[in-house]
Image 1 (cartoon, rainbow, N blue to C red):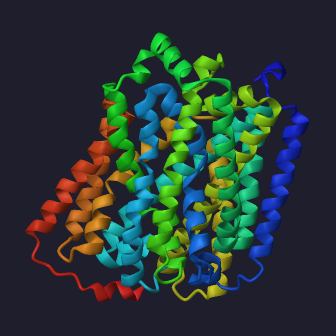
Image 2 (image 1 turned 45 degrees about the vertical axis):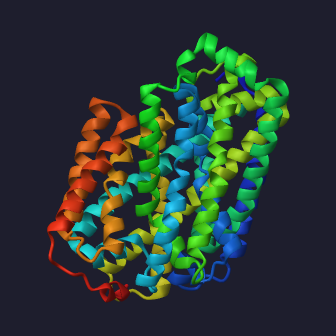
Image 3 (image 1 turned 60 degrees about the horizontal axis):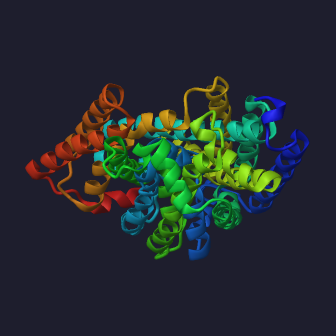
Length: 473
């Protein structure tokens, strides 16, 4: 990145970075001042209301991938690609009834790992932990990468330096404030993101019309407006299932189901999904306008920031900086908190120190958060591939966990054999498809294989699970 190609003066970029870093760290310390025990730190006292619940659901799902990967989808797969990313909204929408069911069955639960351990036993629990921790690191890596890409593209700040600062800020305030700080900052971040996306969308339409965008695509990239574009159609279904798998299994969302007040979870996830749905469409539209606006795009995952800065100049560069910084923080903090809680509860407490005090568990969760941050940084230093290639590598694994979770929550006859085989067969065959066919079918194939195995095992089973066993958590 040369000095002549950047969109903000480095001094402006450093100033914005310092201001927002200080803001989020300050809020994290403020909201974390009442955390005394592990339950306070991990679940915010199980007392989150509808407004904060809806905001944290939407803001956490508006990741850096939403604002940077959704435009990449549109640039590579066209209109169907733009809609494909928005299909992930159904992950939140369909998790709404699951959140209610989870709270009913496990009123004292902490993590999604608690469910697998009590419902399917230690073998399935161990496989689940490997899959979900691999996915969590992958998600963290893509968001940390996006932070470095953003700062480098907009202000010429070195990729490694920018990525390091963004990640460090999130680690600091998440360690201090726990879930209360995460949800509080999410509320502010969601408002900033939504307002910013609306303003940017209208600004693009002031510079180029929809007919001009269509004409440019038809002349130069006709595949992007082809409704029968095969890869794009497959991506539509693949992303729908990937989104379901991401939400259904991950402790980011289970921790919220446990933290929301009774009766709030289903409403909060439904509202969050509906709020999130149009945002990838708006971000994808911005990318499709790049050709008509004459914006050169050196890398697909940089198209969003470059188009906005081209349309709005320095104001646009500042706007996209703020939007993506908020989306980064709202997701990195959530994932750091939920993953550290999962490791603390499922590995440290259950396997290493069952007699640990609530205060000790809180300290361990903070240490784990720090270690996760450092591990993510180490993986991100050598930038690996595009955001899409990194993220969708985990797609078959998360897709393979959908049916063990759904059947396990609603069907007494769901079995351990079904859960173990579904995860291993679905994840394994899905990964083979990823390398042999492409990322746009891997989640679909992995989910289909897992579904067939899980349902077959449940249909042949004569066991009847006792729901009361889940209350032990």
